[in-house]
Length: 404
Image 1 (cartoon, rainbow, N blue to C red):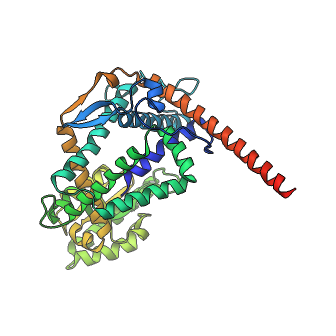
Image 2 (cartoon, one colour):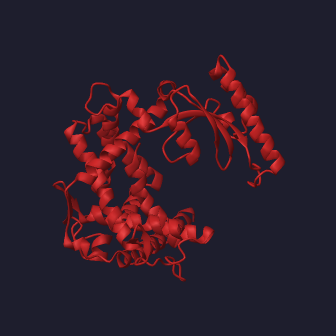
Image 3 (tube, one colour):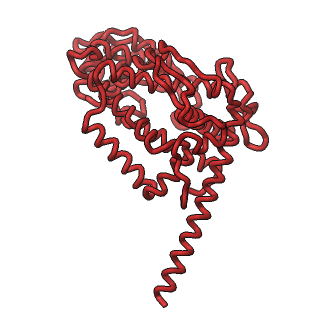
């Protein structure tokens, strides 16, 4: 799970989609820290200056402002798309397509306040990875360091070479050293995850604890809506479905082997369109299923069959199944749930951290910062495209001269 590399590259990609910028970089001015770089030009804050501490760990302006710009870009992209397709966030999107950063957004916070809060919580979370790795001796080994170099080289190759990569870093506002340091967090996370899965370690997640993160259940669904239109069935058809559900439940209650019969009846009667790809049921995490279904499934003991449960989709008969047996057969699911557990531990650690934010960044107007940053990114892209065009013309002229 290499989260950092994707996040690091995503910022420039999002900005490119929003601004319609060229992705053809030419000559660039390498970001070297200090008073160089796009963030210093926008804010006047030296990139290497400490602007935040998390439980004593220092965070530079370069890192802080990268995450602020990333979150601004992500929000802008999503809000504009939701507004265009669904008419949402009408109060936030101005007539010219810009965002009103002072408008209320979520949980009583303005859009600007939300970005600042998310910036600091994101930094605290990734700092928590570093602190937990130190505590549990889950630091980088030689293999990890080699993998970081390999990931870096892959990113450079994906973007077309070192010159193009340097151009991307200039847009991101970070140095290659910072890119590598940030990328290391994903390897530390993976090292911690190994301990979550390894019996005998302090972080080990005992088998019975997996039930805190997921439920395994199968069901027989008798639909009460038309699967194509989503409209309710006629009263006669609704009555037929209810009767069929009642008869099926009665057969299960009377059976000497209800678990075997459940599978047979599910294959015969269930109208769940996802059954062909989930013939044995679903492993689901909280909040991912219809509420009535989820509540009923969680109220059952393993091997227990529910009464008829009604949802917006129809009538369900639910069988609670053994999650641990399923995880033994599907190691990837176990890893996925272990990741959720580790993420929860890190979120707690981040929430308990002692955080101090310096006035340098407290005083930043988020909307103004992002507006100026976006303009500069667009200017860099234009410069790069111009330089690339000139280089291509020079190369073509040289080739023509050689052929003559």
